[in-house]
Amino acid sequence: MINILNLMPDLEPDEMAFIQGITRNMSEEQVKQFVVMYRSRRKEPTLILATTLVGFFGVAGIQRFLVGQVGMGILYFFTAGLCFVGTIVDLVNYKRLAFEYNIKEAQMVQAMMGTYPPFG
Image 1 (tube, rainbow, N blue to C red):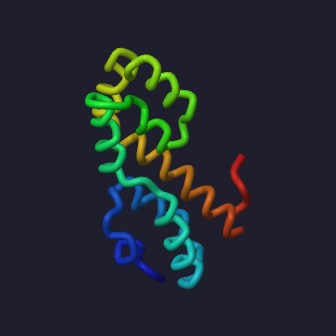
Image 2: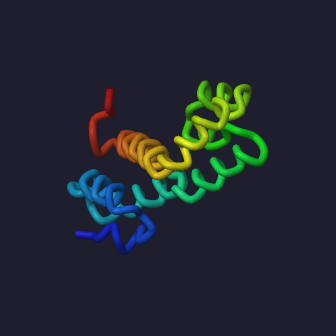
Image 3: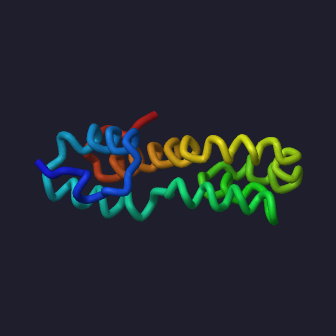
């Protein structure tokens, strides 16, 4: 059995546990394929943090566009991050935003590989 920690040492502990659960029943070759696909789709928490900080000094809402929340991104853009309150909340919760996005992407990759029935 291949160790995900060796292939993706930069994962946060919660994300690591989730990915290990997804890949538990995969062959070594499937795990490597999963890692390649997942790595290209996931967002680093530091990227979410950096783009959230841009909201204070430039364009608010970029972080929401990055995690696929287009509606919220537009709302943040036109309301200056909901008068900076939403931007401050995102600064505190940037790891959660990245984690939730990455979990959805991991499930999508798993479904694309056909190693698990598509989620609903």
